[in-house]
Structures are given as structure tokens and as C-alpha cells.
Length: 481
RNA sequence: CGGGGCGUGGCUCAGCCUGGUUAGAGCGCCUGCUUCGGGAGCAGGAGGCCGGUGGUUCGAAUCCACUCGCCCCGACCA
Image 1 (cartoon, rainbow, N blue to C red):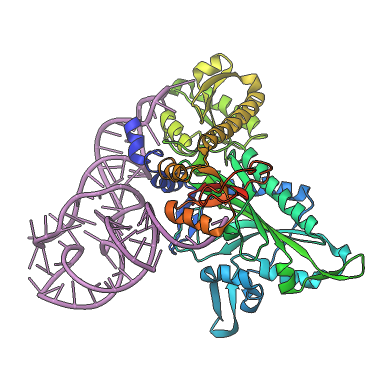
Image 2: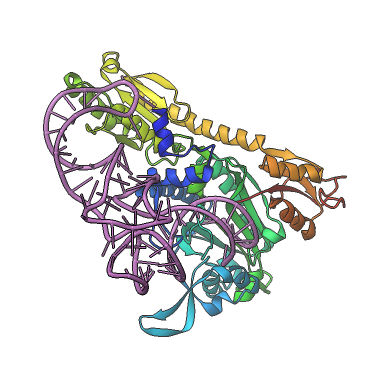
């Protein structure tokens, strides 16, 4: 049996990227569309995204945000208003030049992000300090003509949420940026069970047109970092470009302060990559399309009994959990075990004649494969408990891996050696000069993923790992996706 | 966008170098019967203009050119 599985899915430890694309196809999360770089998100993959949406949206609403929807197309002139912004996105914008047979007098960009169109609207909506803050989020698709694509991690079109807020002061905007950053971190850790580091981007890595970009970064099993979400303080760059002004309490006209922030279907990719194993997906219970699968086991003579008990359990569980009941008779239990494991269902519930005799059933965890006998009267409570345990265990694994692959050094040759041989994050002091940042990139392919927010006195007396001048920051270096 | 690899039933691949009548295998799929506590067995069956276009040739999956797509490695990004 072991042999057979290996034939079907490449080992994760051996070839992560092959494993990744193969598991996505076999678990039917996504399929390649006939256009380059585009994919179809199939029901199993979309269900994960829907759970992400639901759990995140709840957090946005709790912090006062509301959803809205802005147009897919952005007139070229709008996109050009903020200089850095256009420059940053120019290479990857898809253009609409015709409507039917007629050539448009002005090209329309298919949104790569919506700052331009949203800010254009905000300039009409903002007049007084009483109009602020504006706290709007939109769930949308965006298009970026990427050269290299990978399912979920980087596709030409992807789904995301983008928050766009307007505030009266820098402080309010900054508070919002950090509030969202914390929501992202908490969400990814608690719901996706992925350890992330939160921090600030270096100027080189920040969003085109932003004052500052904040990020959450996760570590993938191959030791490469993945940017999991970003929160930007746009300052007044866009309000000046789009003329978003308000009259303040002091009766003076002021440019507004803005933020924008987003996470995308890339999170689905991260979840797949971080938790899976050689036998397929392992999905965190909070976002798994199915949290439990019921597999009845019977010989011909006990068929009736087993099926009726199993169905009864299913009816009970489905009220509270995302449950699937696999009553198919054309597959053997063993086949089903392997199949649902590959699809990453966190808990399998086996119900057979032996269990029924004892008024019990068997729970099997996907993450540890541990089997537990459960009294049938307490299935709901036990399932709830076990799902939480799996959820917690997955996070602990991710956290352990991330910590084990986060190393500090003051020595540049050691930094290079770690990046080359062990990968992961390397924490080192940095003088803040782009030259040093670039040198590291050229020599190691590692970039500054983030600068932690609580540097405090950690840099006191430290010298830049590259040039030896006094350090201004602590930087997390890593190769990245 | 540069370098490398690969496109043959749903999947994994053989055949191609050295063109030649009906293009193969395993798995999967369909039907039937027997099975069922870790990917069951037997019997029968369906399914492929060999990624596309053009060329060479009496004849192309096979040779040539172009093109499209996918994967990997590098320069840019949620």
C-alpha cells in the first residue's frame, strides 16, 4: 500500500513543488484553465476560501468595517494619478482596448488593485471630518499579468479582499493599519494554524505608493518565506493625487489619511503547503470543507444495522459540524480511508459491527493518525474537543518548525551560510541602507521580509551585519516565494 | 522574460533515434457477480484525429520549422 501511494503523489519532503501541484489536482482543489496562468478553483478549494472569507469578514465587521463593491475596470488616467503606484503596477496590468467592435477612446485597466478607482470615489464622498473614518472592504477578483504562476500562490487572476479606509489623522490611519495587521496575524494563526511573523517592510519592499507597508510572513516547509498579507499606511499620497480633502474641526481644509490592506487566495496555497504530508492534504478543522468523514464498515450480514447507526450519527453530527457521510458501496473502507486522508479531512469516524456492539465508534485524527474509541453518546462533545486539538496541534507544529528555522546572527558569512544551507529566517541587525539590503539579495537571493515592530533596545550597540555601521533595525532575511 | 525539461485515452507512461497496414500497457472509468476493520477479486466493455499549425515524403505519433501549454531553475510580485 505504501508503494502505491508513493507512485501517486510525490513525497512532500522530496519534491515540495511537485507534491504541491499534484496534491492540488488530486484533492480537486483546483485545475488548470486553458489560459496561461489561470486556474479553476473547484468546489473543495473554494470551500476553503469561503471559510476564510466567513471567518475574516466576521473580524472586519466586528471592527466596524462594511463591505462594498467597486468596478472591475479603471480608466487609464485614474491609474496614472499616483506616480509611484502606476510605475509599480504598469508591467502587470491587463488592458481593455475595445468595447465590442469599437476602440475605446481611453484604455481601461482590469484592476490589479483598486486604490485608483476607490480613491476617485472617496474624493466625492469626503467633505467634512464628520464623514470620517470611512471603513470599507471589498471582496473581489484582481488581475496581475504575472510571468511565473503557481496555483493559489500566484495566478494571473486571484480572489482577495481589499480594505480601503480614510481617516482624519495620521495617527488614526496608523492605528487602523496595525489593527488590521493584528487581525491578519491572529486569523492566520488561529484559523489557518500557520505561525506568522508580523512586521514592517523595508522601503524597497513596500507597496507602490505607500508610506509604509506592514506584513505577515509565514515559513514554508522548504524554508522559503511567503508573504501572507499586507497592510499599508498610504499616508496622504493618494489623497493628494485624487484630491480627497475634508474640512477639519479647526475649519481648515486637509488631505485625508488612508490605508489599504489585503489577503488573497494565496492563503489557501499556504495552508496546503504548510500542513500537508506524503499522503496528501491536512486541513485545519476551522477551514476544512469537511471537518469529519463517516465511514461505515460492514459485512453483508450487518449492512442494515451499520448503515442505520451511521446515518443516525451523521444526522446528529451534521447539525453542528461540516460532515460527510461516505456510504458508497463500490469502495472498500480501506480505499475510503486513503482517499479522505488525501483530501485532508481532519477526523475520520469509523463505524463497524464491533463498535456498535460496544455502543462506541472510532475517531482517527488525520494529523497524527491516532485512533480513539469514543462512546456513541458523546460523539458531539468528543468531536468538538478533538477538532480543537487537531487545530491546536497543527499550529504548534507550524510554530515549532518556524522557530527551529529562525536563527540570529551578527556575522555576515554565517548569514550567507544559513540562507544557503538551511534556509529559513535569519535575524540580523541592519543599518537601514538599501545598498546593504541589495548586497544580501544579490549574494544570497534573500530579501528583508520584515522589520519587527518591537525592536526596542535590541539594536543598541549592534552593527549592521553587512557593512558594520551602527544598526538602525533588526531585519528578518529569507528567500521568498 | 532568459536557461532546462515535458506534451500520446481521465492519470502515469511505452512507442519516436532507425517513418510503413489494426497506436500499446498499468491504473482509473462503465456493466455484472462476489467482497468490505487500511487503496478487494473475477468476467465483459467503453474511451486516443498522438498539444496545435505548416512543411518534407507515395506514406508522419515518429523527420523539419513555427506555435501553444505545463513543470523546474533564475530576474519581477497578494
